[in-house]
Length: 187
Image (cartoon, rainbow, N blue to C red; front, side):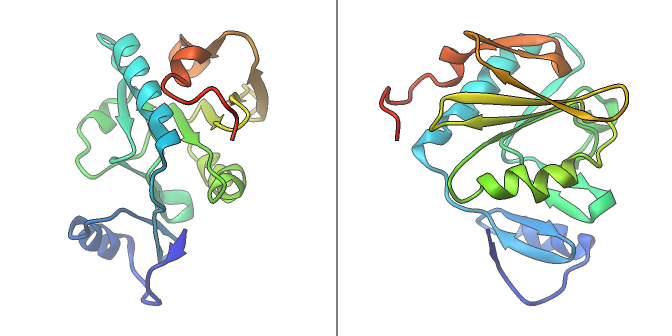
């Protein structure tokens, strides 16, 4: 991510400004950062969104793709997760951003991997409702699920079988479905 301006924004300033922008920007601690471009491999975000949308139909849970913002008030930030699920009535009424997700999924890229694993995950851990944080590693064809325990610790589970269980929303997605449409060769 690249910082857009040296101007300092309040959260309200950011929301008003972002509404007028053609490209998406994340907001962290009064600074605004341009989002990187999407690569073909991010088709997996669409695959996961479609799979979850189908599986969660008829439940109180809503699936959102990267056009919906997530507010993490504890760290004064707004993010655009690749995919997120909220089962909270408050979020179902939200127009600009969600605040109570139970599942967040990020697709790793060379330019975002360190941030997604580090500072962004640290911010996401501040969200009390978050039960599971999933990282999809396209190059390794691996799905890593970080799950919150009753003691508020985070345990890593790597989906190594043909199916990845997403405990936060009580469903599963086949790895072949997640990575559908990608070339078989590793990059």
